[in-house]
Image (cartoon, rainbow, N blue to C red; front, top):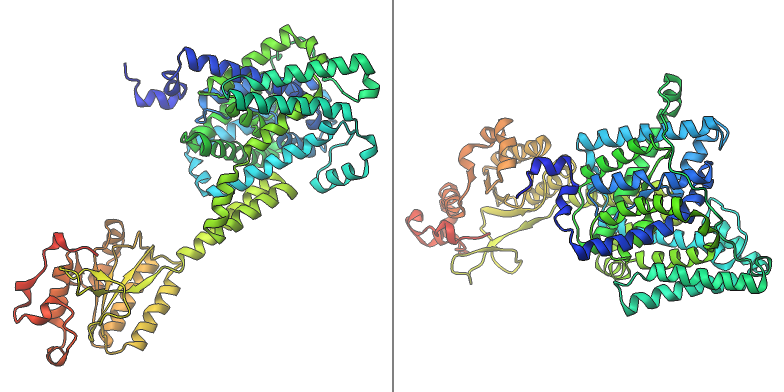
Length: 597
């Protein structure tokens, strides 16, 4: 039975539920198990960064992950707590309340609700198209930069060095290079064991749950080393036992004073969280080939934060490393991300004490493997070779991601992309065209070696004629009038014009007037419907003259030929049009269907 389109819009999980079978469910559940294992130590760490009790990082990884998977558009995005979102929240809320206090927790939960409402509203009013301004190069650069950040943040745990978190990547590396004496080689052995196991398992059989096997083997090695040498000597830190507790019910605070205090932060976190989530979705979709709906992703993220605020979760958004691990584990549908949240609940209830044997170094090794696989070296190489402008966008985004805040990195990449786009569209190409004598139907082509009509200039305009390009196009038209004053008539091929605004229409009218003052006129061929509507509604078509607009090239040449100075035609030796050699021009028109620009 076919599912109505309206129903799939309300319940997007109905679209991919038909893809579920025994094989996909098995693969998705394994990917979900991997994701749940990864988020255990991460959730605790993110909660500490956010100034929240450790268990709240796990709560934020449960309900929001399930809701976002069911109502989002990406089949691989995993939502939950993230480093960036936790840092942004802590830096703002810690000024208002004491981190970890009941007031602080209440405000964090209320903030999640406010962010969810804003995200959901933006999805309903279809502002998801805003993500179309995030170019492919921005996504590739941002993904590579984020992957490097993930790896850099795990370096201290990978090496067993006690390094406090800092806001700058340079500070982290500076500390690492100056504190090699505190390195614990055995902790690195655990991390390397996990990393190597994950690599080998993926090469042997990509469908095998290699990440789980890597974590288990790394944990086994860590336990054996600690038993033999002692934890103080090895420096291998374990995650520690977690409390067995479901996320308690919570209620956001709706007092006007709290809402007023949190409003600026809620707006900033909304824009940041959406950008992060959609950027991750699009970066993974480049590999998976699955289309992403920005509007639906906005709705999914909004519902996840709204629901999470009633289950003791703070602001959740898309996670780079968990989403990458989810895709890398072979996830086929959002069931993988949803099951990760459910499996995490089961793990916390059933085997939470066993996390005391999960080494942080093993998780670090696994996350570095995920970060490496997030970098699309093939796409980076293509972009760097293909276009210098796109290469600049990629480089700026990559470096901004490394050395600036993540939201600013994407913003800079988008701004640079728009600047390049505006510069490109503000200088549309205006190329001379002439009939090709070697073509049976005299198709127009660009060639400096072929003769032109002494009385008619033929130009082809590409791209849009709008307020940003009228200055450039106007200057080019002026130069053609000055350099070729004998060519008083202008035949403008407008098939390549995508759109015209009022400024562009005014430019065409001004050009028509200038041509008439010279004793000629302006003629237009194949103006697209969208542009023609602007011309008609504004009265610009009448000002230029409806008889000067043509849909057939043969009719246009014949009509223009009738208006040329026949005294000049009589002495002309160019004879570039079929009409030039016929006493009756209309008798030798070329069939419209056979003429192509």
